[in-house]
Each structure stands twice: as structure tokens, then as C-alpha cells.
Image (cartoon, rainbow, N blue to C red; front, side, top):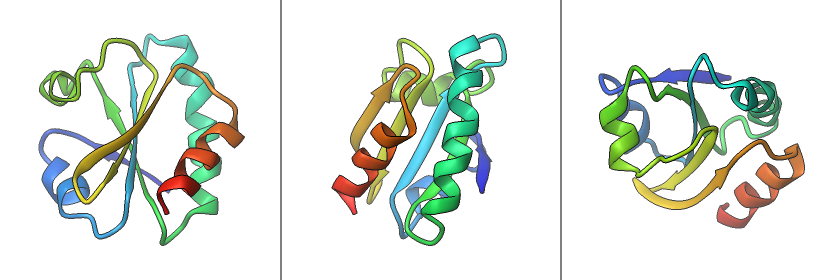
Amino acid sequence: MVKEISSDNFEQEVVNSDVPVLIDCWAPWCMPCRIVSPVVEEVSNEYVGKVKFGKLNVDENQEVAVRFGIMSIPTLLILKENKLVDQIIGAVPKQTIKKKLDNIL
């Protein structure tokens, strides 16, 4: 399950998470984001209880995007213990996302 992440719930959902968090940074006008979104949803079903998954609309939450230096989307941020440990930029295959997650687990 992929939750909506915003500036309002960022601390609760990401900072205070007891498991690693993958944040799909996207925007409604971004075509590659529409390709990545269902892949992230699929991967989230395979990592239930191990990794928390969220979507962050960068147009509506620019301060978070700036905080992480997001220059292009889609960008997948992987945080562990509230530290950015990896990121994936662009539309990538499911296996690429799973490999990055497996490396931090």
C-alpha cells in the first residue's frame, strides 16, 4: 500500500517510521511518473511490514522536494532512520527498485 506523503504528515510517516521508507516523488503532469507509479504499488505489496511506501506530489510539497534536492521526476527516495540512503531517478524496472531495497534491508 502506498500512502500519500505531504509536508503535513512527513514527520509522522517518514521521520518517525521504524522501517525504511521509499518515497515516490511525482507530479500529475509527468508521464514517466505514471509509468513508475504502478510499479511502486506492485513492489509495495512484496515488502509489507519491511518497507513503508509513500507518494509525494512535488508541485504541492515543494519544500520537501527542495530539502532533498529533487531536480527531476520521477525520483524515488529511500530513507532509513530518517537518513537518505539511496535514490533512483527516472522510470526504472521493478527489479532495479527491489535490488536497491534489498541492499538496505
